[in-house]
Amino acid sequence: MATGRTHRPATRSRGIPEATVARLPLYLRALTALSERSVPTVSSEELAAAAGVNSAKLRKDFSYLGSYGTRGVGYDVEYLVYQISRELGLTQDWPVVIVGIGNLGAALAGYGGFASRGFRVAALIDADPAMTGKPVAGIPVQHSDDLEKIISEDGVSIGVIATPAGVAQQVCDRLVAAGVTSILNFAPTVLSVPDGVDVRKVDLSIELQILAFHEQRKAGEESSAEEGPEALAEPEPAAAVVAPAPRGTTGTTGRKGPDGDVPAVMPA
Amino acid sequence: MATGRTHRPATRSRGIPEATVARLPLYLRALTALSERSVPTVSSEELAAAAGVNSAKLRKDFSYLGSYGTRGVGYDVEYLVYQISRELGLTQDWPVVIVGIGNLGAALAGYGGFASRGFRVAALIDADPAMTGKPVAGIPVQHSDDLEKIISEDGVSIGVIATPAGVAQQVCDRLVAAGVTSILNFAPTVLSVPDGVDVRKVDLSIELQILAFHEQRKAGEESSAEEGPEALAEPEPAAAVVAPAPRGTTGTTGRKGPDGDVPAVMPA
DNA sequence: CCATCTTTGTGCACGCGTTCACAAAGACAT
DNA sequence: ATGTCTTTGTGAACGCGTGCACAAAGATGG
Ligand SMILES: NC(=O)c1ccc[n+]([C@@H]2O[C@H](COP(=O)([O-])OP(=O)(O)OC[C@H]3O[C@@H](n4cnc5c(N)ncnc54)[C@H](O)[C@@H]3O)[C@@H](O)[C@H]2O)c1
Ligand SMILES: NC(=O)c1ccc[n+]([C@@H]2O[C@H](COP(=O)([O-])OP(=O)(O)OC[C@H]3O[C@@H](n4cnc5c(N)ncnc54)[C@H](O)[C@@H]3O)[C@@H](O)[C@H]2O)c1
Image 1 (cartoon, rainbow over the protein chains, first blue to last red):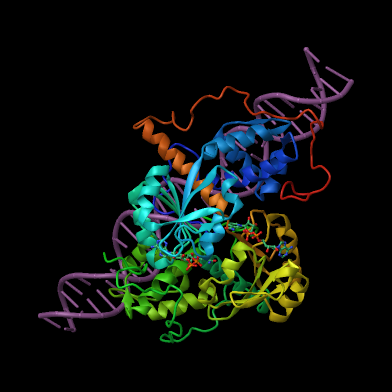
Image 2 (cartoon, chains in turn cyan, brown, purple, red):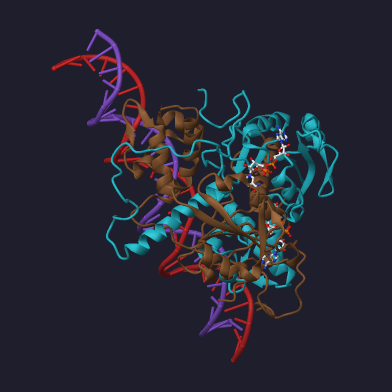
């Protein structure tokens, strides 16, 4: 999962568990598909299968929203769509700014999934003067000098960062200072933000590495078929000092500026 | 988090906890940055700050890998980079195919983060004949007819799906049948795969909806400053019947209509 | 109005993950 | 060699999330 919250020690208020919140969009998607087919009601078993979760889990999730089901029948699709949408805050309009209109930013700008659920691309922002004014996905790119103005004028509270990692923290700082309180970060960096600001990250590289880990496990188990406790994934004691430090040349993180731009260690 | 595993009831073998595995790439990134600065050792406190986690958690995570620290000093950066890389399977080459070279797929193809850690884009695959042979990010796009051949010839075990949601499941099926055992899915669909295949998803829309939920909460708390238990996020009792349910057609058991074509209900 | 059958809502137990707190290990100075 | 000081490694407690299993609710049919 390219997920990951920051801050907020999971001490959510007297509300819905974080894990449940993360599944609500999944239910909503499945329900929307049913709605489009004009299916009137759905059982927890059916809906759970469509969302890829356990039916008991789904029922418990819905119980946090209140009891919107009818025993012996199931859940009213339309009503549930409405309830979940309202709970997630999708009944209102959420203007979003995307900062960093490169390869990824441009793809995001044109993504239909944005507009589908109350999210509206309010502005595209880039630091490159050559891009200013140029339309991307029908929306003219604005220069980052105007970032603060754009955010305050449109009342934007959600920002998407798709800039190089080196400048992500400073872009984040400017967004937060301008009033943004929710950030979706695509740059491979740990962002630090003040309390009250939510950060979620999407990190392709991390996802791949997790897959690689499991992939390696599979390959290991394969060779050592049925084995006891360990004996796998531990080729050798590896002596004590090995680390040849092969990589270390041109990383992707390509730090560049003289300033503290890289994630690295906090100056404490 | 755009995360989300599928299957595998978290009953990992006598190995590293899933939560720890998900953090290893984070540590690795911070360590790599330190390595590039030629920092020889780092304490759990410093590294934890750089990775944005609790130091006790970091130490426990490392304890699962074995004890690679020196009390009173900290951890050897180079050695730790090597150990984590090895544990994640990054010391070997992982050929990856990307299926669906549209806006997103093209951005992914040109992403430097791929090559940085042992991942190599082995092939770009698209169903559009007009794209066949056309180079994207320096790699010629191949037609999806050759999908099976490409995967078996290059020994690809990791596939990235960036096709429209409607065809994601069938693309997934073909990938799995051809030998892919790890899938990173960008399409907004729940993929069903046989045991032994890992699926991770990256879902922009879900991330935004989660942010919107918290954003709405913040707005609610703001207005009702210091309040008791509830009284927030509940604008109105909303009567009882609101949902404009269409119904009236099929009987109670709407079930699945003609055929399952959308992510909707599982055909059981 | 009663019997039966379906499906919800949830009590409960269990396991994973997180965090605190501290003993032990080792570096370093004297 | 001994003492001091830093930092690791982990035992233990706690809370969250998950899934089983079942009683209760309500629809449906007679
Ligand atoms: N391309 C991908 O598939 C992909 C995948 C995962 C993560 N990422 C990450 O997303 C980020 C963007 O990737 P990309 O491939 O689009 O890179 P890119 O170089 O194509 O685009 C970066 C854009 O950010 C702009 N920019 C630079 N500094 C800025 C600033 N201070 N303010 C505003 N805009 C600024 C640049 O002008 C450029 O247009 C990177 O951090 C990358 O690691 C990319
Ligand atoms: N663009 C984004 O920022 C973004 C963000 C999140 C998720 N997504 C999801 O990623 C997917 C792709 O998005 P996109 O914007 O690149 O769409 P797109 O339409 O630009 O690209 C889709 C590509 O897939 C190809 N394709 C279609 N059927 C195929 C098949 N059976 N086999 C192989 N290739 C096939 C098409 O030819 C096209 O090139 C969608 O599911 C979208 O919802 C996109």
